[in-house]
Length: 163
Image 1 (tube, rainbow, N blue to C red):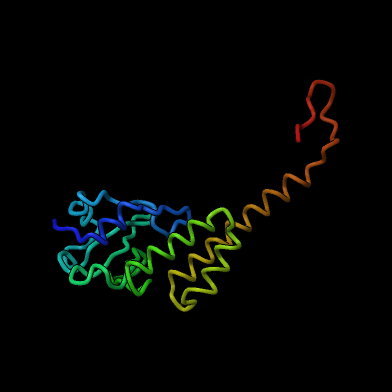
Image 2: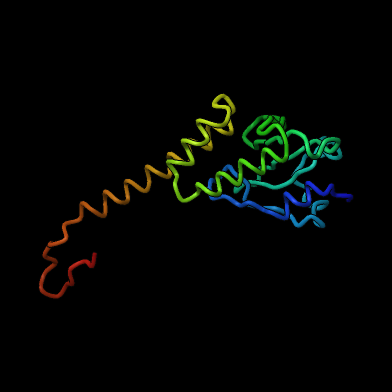
């Protein structure tokens, strides 16, 4: 398979993110052909799968325009119908890079997605919700840890918790 330079650079950069809906698995540029098994038979040749998220759903470009718009194909849909997630491969790489910079700050990442990406796009709305959910989990864990009495008496043979 002849891989355009821009696609090879994108998959070689392999920006893997922790949000389950975002890319985490990239083929090597020379292994892009076998990676196309992610696509249904009716899409073979028309689309080029670039990477996939944590549930195996692909991000792709039209084979005829590999530097053009980037699409996402959700496995949750009743039929296979990719939808637009970025205007170009370069835009997609830039937004993934920005999210990678914000990965440690779920609130910052959620705010950035909500402010800079289309809120009516199902993928970006779910990505923001995923970041918000991770904030809620972290706050719940912190609350649980902080509400444990540090001076609790566990009896004569038990040690007190270390903080």
